[in-house]
Image (cartoon, rainbow, N blue to C red; front, top):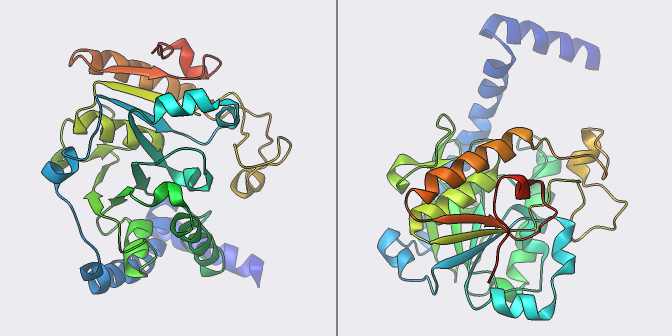
Length: 285
């Protein structure tokens, strides 16, 4: 039966004009259900606009957090310094409990959006972590919007996000490589959600954008033992010692650094061992 299903999938993909087209069509009913749920339940939330969002900034510096294992090396003194400024997380940074999170960007979460046996428990786990974490008590959640924003629509449609927190909706741009200059243009996805987080910080007007826990020299994560890979990496046969597929990302962020410098915005990296340190300056207080 499995072999027949695979043959049928290959046949359909060929008829539709390629694998990408086939997978896109498979996502349509999934996205439609998530979109309908969002439309039904969005009234339970308070949404802020760009003007309100700008008023929540406390500093001209924002620390954008990845989830690399170098986060475990931060000292209490370093964390206290970081909390004098603004903080922005994304992806599974919700597992941390060591720093106040001012903004958190919601986009890709589960290993797959298609199989409810996988995405539903992973979404439940994700938002259970959010709701139970005092570091996210006052967070503004930055939620990807639009028909294709499956996880953003599910987060609102299934009322998984805490209803006491304000939400800001943003749209992605998967075609452009340069950082967007406004939310109306959409945030550039590029090669990863990290770029959307950086683009968000750029559009909202921070003058210093510091990347923390974006290591790239291995696939270790701050919440896992050093020898344990994430489930999504295991499915790709990736080991904790493997580099991230980072060569293109490093080059693009190096280009972004120059582009942002033209507007007097400094993009830097906190960990001097990060692969990004080859193209970005290391942060100095």
